[in-house]
Image (cartoon, rainbow, N blue to C red; front, side, top):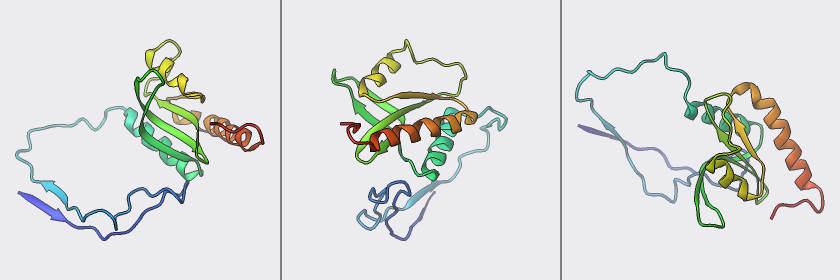
Length: 158
């Protein structure tokens, strides 16, 4: 059986970029949330599994957003050679891209000699590899420095 719920319409803006609407619900048709009843209770999930890459990415997105960075997740792009790319997180300053962040759940990962790393490094901005919350302060400091460099005359990204 399918249950439907409706949500009041309103426009939500990202705290980091007040001009960028996330999903202006007043322009979209009212769509019900669909809930499907279970067919059995035979499936099992081990709640002791280690944190996933998605959870780390969501944590980092939230922290960057709360700290005022204009950050977006799962954004698609294309290289000049026509190769597709899907970035875990990207950071903007003004209208320009300033950083790409790849999130991995395995410490010691290395993008230096991978196809993904090579492709991401063709976008003209630094590529950061993030795999643990204890790297956050260092990442924030590096992103802040990038934003300050861009704010100086003659250092704008195109």
